[in-house]
Structure formats: structure tokens, C-alpha cells
Image (cartoon, rainbow, N blue to C red; front, side, top):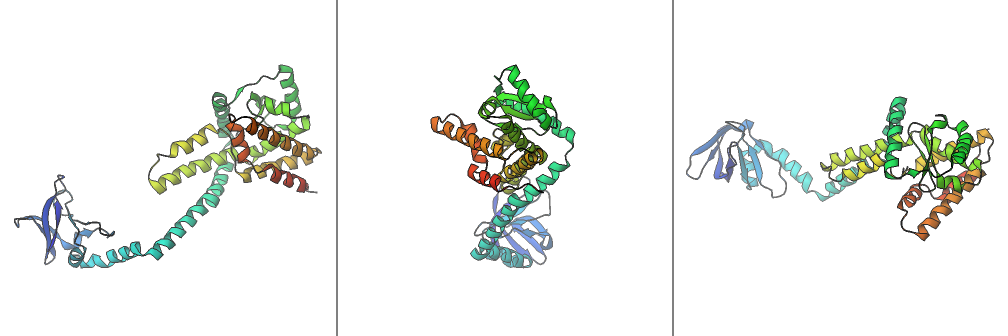
Length: 341
């Protein structure tokens, strides 16, 4: 006989009771000996043991789903001996520190592999399979969102915009109408549909047209490899993974906000290296010296460094800079670059 509490499955009331085995039946009685429930033993199920947490016996007979709860682990396992072996095995696994350590390491390794390798690889496959029409819609949505949150109207003269558009138009497959001018920090942004945004500050920073062409090809490298879509897919996978691991999306607003606003377009360093390689290959095909790309990167780096020293009010520029590989690393890659013969 085991002491515990009985719930009839109809009301929330719990009453003191006992559970005993009579042949192939389980009987639950109240304090006066009145039978509250009578269930065949072979259909009763015992919850897994977890430390000293009370165990629950599910009694599937009768109306509702009545249960019997007890802290007498030894007593209940004696009655339900058929379930004792599996229950004890699970309990031993959950109580073995060495096995817990192994399981923890395995789980962390699996999460690392999933985040670092599986998610990026899957995002690349999906991004490359998306139809161009969807990318065009994403481009229209992106420029509108960036205009509302970060970008200001360009202050370049109409003549200067026309000149730059004429210089860059032959290099932008989507056409000259897909070249946008805005005011922000010295920067250029590629949108999923192949459009490119140049800021006034970047155009003023460039000392010749070849430097602008080099930056344009870097941004087109992002388009060619569909980095923005891949990044969005990876962020979405992170949100789903967070939910699967925790069962809670309370912290997902921050993650989805990053994806939705594309505030700083903080691509991974691998993405930036791919875009750099695309730019260098394109410049080599045109016979433009890679030094133009090298020089504009150094000038951009100096510009961001000066901004951070003079003011703490330009977090966007700092986020953009921190997302990219260190300039010295990129310069070294440019110096080492050799076009395919």
C-alpha cells in the first residue's frame, strides 16, 4: 500500500488516498477505505523518476483521466514492477554526472555544427533557388525600409548624380535606374534585386571614378552570391532554433528586428571576402588596377576611425566597420590577389 493524493480527472480537487495492488487491479481508496478508482494494472503508467520529485501514476480507466501522486518511490515501483526497470534506468542516466557531461558536450557540439555549418549551407541552397521576382519585391521593400529608418535624401547636385550614374551604369546589370543616391555615412549598400545605394559621403570621399567602380563591384558581389537573402534566412533559422531550444520567443523580437530592418547590413566576414574576390576579379577583367580598391578601403577605414574618435553619435558607422574583416586583413588579401590567367 502506498500513500499519496488522488485526482479524479474531473475536478481540481486532490484528496489523501492510498494505492494498492489486488491481483491484476490497482485500487485507490480514501481515508475511510472507500474505493475511489479501480484500474487494470496493465494500463496504468508511471512517470519517470526525477530526483525526489513526486511520481504520478496515470489511471486511464473511468471518466476523465484520474491520477495518483506519491513521493514513495520504492513503494510505487514495487507495485508497478514492470515499469521499474525502465524508470530506474532513466533515473540513473539523469543522475550520472559523467553522462550528463558527455551529453552536454555533445549537445553544444551539435548546436555549433548546426549554426556554423548546417544553417549557412542550407541558407545558400535556398537563396540560390529563389525566383528573381521575389528578389525584386525584396529590393523594393528594402529601399523603402532603409529610407524610413536610416537614409536621408541625397544632397548631391543633379549634375553630379547624372555624372556618377553615367560612370557606373555600364557596370550595374540592373540598369542605371537601379542606382540610388542617399545621405548617411560613407557607405554603399546592395539590395537583393541588384540595385545599389551610394551615399553622398562615399562619393565625396572617392578621389576618382575607378574607386567608385571598385566599390560598386564589391556590392554587386553581395548580389551575385545573394548574401542579403542568405543572411536573412540564417537569422530566421536562428529564431526557429531559439524557439526549439527554449520554447520561448520572448527574445526573438531583437533577432527578427535585425533581419527586418537590415540596419547595418552586417554580413559575415566570409561574405565580405567573397564580395572582395568578386570585385577584384571584375576589376581585373576590366583592366582596372586593384590599387584603386585598396586605396578607397584605406580611406574608408580612416574615415570611420576619425568619426569614432570625434563623436560617439555615429553607431551605424561603427557597426558597419566592425562587421567587416579588419582593413589590414583585407588589404593583405588584395596585395596577394593574382587574377586567373
